[in-house]
Image 1 (cartoon, rainbow over the protein chains, first blue to last red):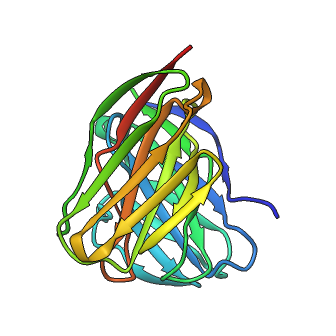
Image 2 (cartoon, helix red, strand yellow):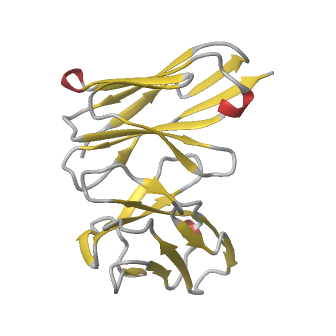
Length: 113
Length: 108
């Protein structure tokens, strides 16, 4: 069974530029999560989807971050414009449902210069 | 929100030694997972353990939900066990909150 796929693995941009990350969850998993992990900290949830609907986006900085999961399968997370403090690893995870074990992708390491 | 504290924050072991990592949480939870984040940043599932005890090879975990803590046991540690161990708890069924992590270094 294929795991959670993410791309790109690494991205370096300058502040005020835009960037997008892609995630493809495990086949059949209805719930998809995006997390931000700053160096030295645990992951922090940004947004949670159940199929193509948003369950929780309370910690998503909506002035610059957006995410979508239009067909209920893969998802994109966008930052526009990026700030220095957005430098982090962006992790995507999926689970069969909201009360189940989560499985993580390899992450995208973003550096904002 | 719920507080998740892990101890110790850092741990250095000689290869072959045993260790116990602890996760305390401030509220009742529906779900709890233990992860190992390897040096390349990949989060690897160790246990999904909202309550009870599970074992997988040299690793085992126990969650006492009524007392709001979980323990991860590592026996006969190996250098490949190095990395950061996180527990994550879900109080509502909607969102996992990660702990502060325990950084483990196993020396040959």
